[in-house]
Length: 294
Image 1 (tube, helix red, strand yellow):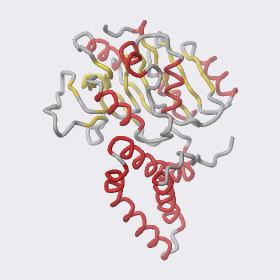
Image 2 (cartoon, helix red, strand yellow):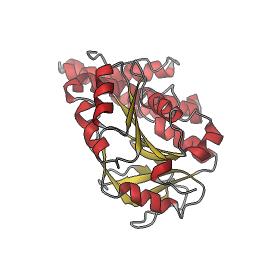
Image 3 (cartoon, helix red, strand yellow):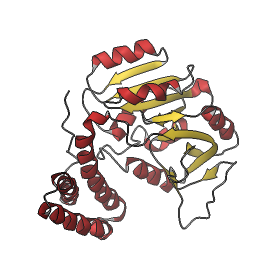
Image 4 (spheres, one colour):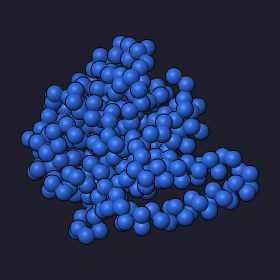
């Protein structure tokens, strides 16, 4: 089944994203339904964005449930066959949707289609070293996984595999897309990049910059937690430990160095990394949340 504007919805999970989400929404065709999952209980935001954009439905999660869980909420509210997941700091270039629609007509048995980042130095996809995947400037090409900030899901096909358990909600932040892609590939589903469909990802700007310090601490905590959890889930505890060993040693050395040199900011960063890793290794949930005003 090919994609059309009539059977496509867009899902955007937001959190303190007022400063960027309008550019994202404005880059999407007005006839396409957009479902915004705001990880808050901000009724004012919901009312404002629904009044400003007639094609937007905003759902409040009541609290910060993370990207994966937020996307799952969005998927449960999509009644169409396809869903394009976007981060709020992603801007679609002109004809990005058209190029995906055109490409889908020639693709068979796809689980995910994704546009390509306009920053080739930061590719939004990964190849499997054991497969003969190749980059193509014109035609869609297969990849092993894509970054979660822009991916189109074939819901009609994937719901048969996952029901509504698309993203692992144990993961609050980072690698939830890698986990999803890995499970998809294990079920012999195809993932494609459409090189003619381009996006601009601002990167790291999804949350209001006034919260930069707390968000940076949270990112470092969750990066280490998620990295160990992902590897433990797919390869076992021993392999996960071996894979994380260099990160552990590096974080320890840097924490001690910045402790001695009285660099409070850097010391806190590596303290958070060690804390995230330790909690993941002993089996604690991904509990850390940034301390922001309501």
